[in-house]
Image 1 (cartoon, rainbow, N blue to C red):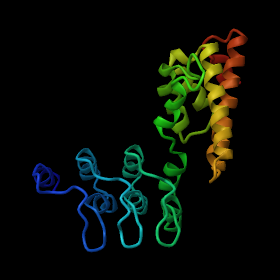
Image 2 (image 1 turned 90 degrees about the vertical axis):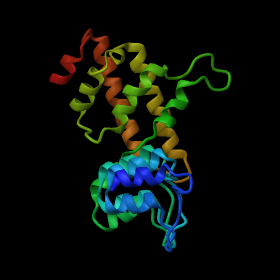
Image 3 (image 1 turned 120 degrees about the vertical axis):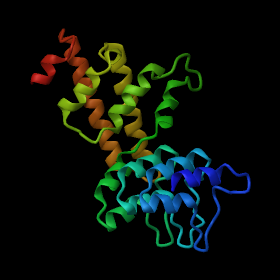
Image 4 (image 1 turned 30 degrees about the vertical axis):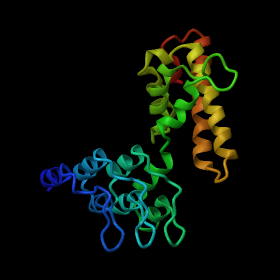
Length: 226
């Protein structure tokens, strides 16, 4: 019962990250049982989403993925769950979800890209006098990155949802950041080929939008009809 849990968590004597005999936290139990409201409550009270004291090294994200609940899987990711942690047999959350046939959760995990990782480019780095990405574009661009529908028409429609993106300078900055992220995904130690390909694809779509603007297709309508 979520209400009862809220009353218990209001007590100073209750530790939100307490462990049972198997090393499971309340958040792990809630994630595995697919109780979204309880997961949200526990996270609000400071539950450690990356606690891995479980006897077999399972994390809350792993339990969420095993449960097949995409909403809870997304919740764990938004709360900062690490996707590359492995259990005692060396499997990540995505690998475990794939093993038991929870492919929707695999898609959610593999497509996840933290907003913080994108916002790095909204701050000047080193000798830069201005950021590579204007802060106002971070939200719309992150929404495009997180979409699981890679139909180019759908992606152009996402651009059209945000008038601030239908601008030559904005599109140029966005696709350049996508290129940087693609390169980063390729060069990182655990190369993420799927995400690298997605970043490259988004960059290509944004460049098509830019080319369409240069042809005086101010609302990108002609591009959608192609």
